[in-house]
Length: 109
Image 1: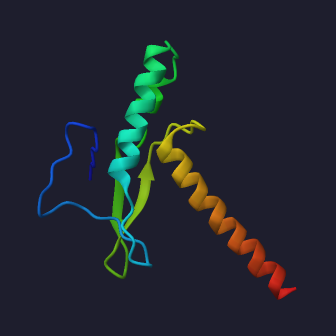
Image 2 (image 1 turned 135 degrees about the vertical axis):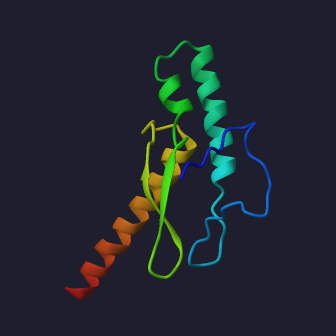
């Protein structure tokens, strides 16, 4: 499944995918992608080579249904730039999970 969230290709429809957390909050992929495209245009203006990688960040994402019937991101290509909104968001979620795991282990001891 291909999900393209480029600035001009995002269209509202009844079948639009929504990424909802367990808490009920909707993840804002579109807003982060728009920030990412703005960052890529700035890199392009400055003639940085990595602007192509940043521009293509999270263009293709593969989701699979879980046993509960939810969609889970199973494959994606990210640019890994420190200033990319999408990569920073994903990195912050990863770090939050790691902190929770460390705290849980510390409480057990």
